[in-house]
Image (cartoon, rainbow, N blue to C red; front, side, top):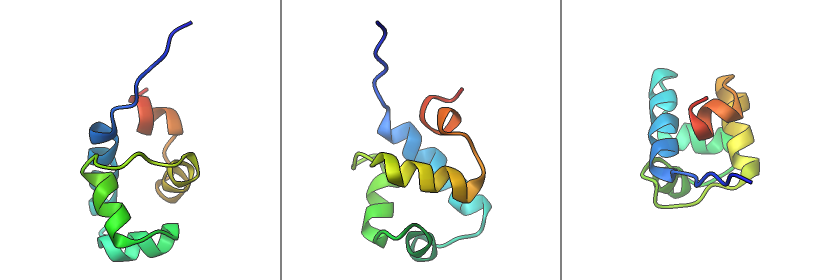
Length: 73
């Protein structure tokens, strides 16, 4: 059985890039997701693990797959 380790820094960088491509401030994006701006900052810098529920919301907001966001697939 293969176990993949999540690279939160890479995930965070993708989230930041997507947010900027959609011209959203951290505050506006946080409100859309129902989280705080501080949480968005921590996610984008890879300093916080991301709950699955939040990952799914990010994918829905930007119309990307969970596989792409998490594993680059």
